[in-house]
Image 1 (spheres, rainbow, N blue to C red):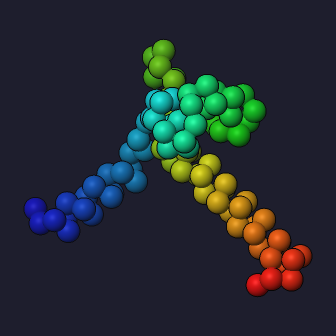
Image 2: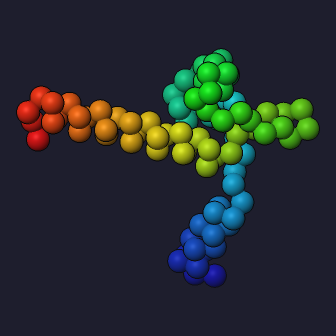
Length: 88
C-alpha cells in the first residue's frame, strides 16, 4: 500500500472504532491529574466512563468533544468581551 492509502485506511479505522483511554491518558490530554478527572465526572463536566470488565475507560471522542466545547466557550467569551469592550 502507498502512504496515502495507509493514511486513508488509518483515518477510516479511527473514525469507525473509537479509541478508549484510561484515566491517566484523559488527564494527560486535559493537563490535569487523575483525581481532577474524577471530580470533573462527578460535577457532570465530563461524561462518565464506560466499564471494560472492572476498568474505567473514556472514549477519545468524548474527551475531544469536551475540549471542543471548552474552546467554543472561550471563543464566545472573547467575542463578547470584544463587543462589550469596544474592540474588534
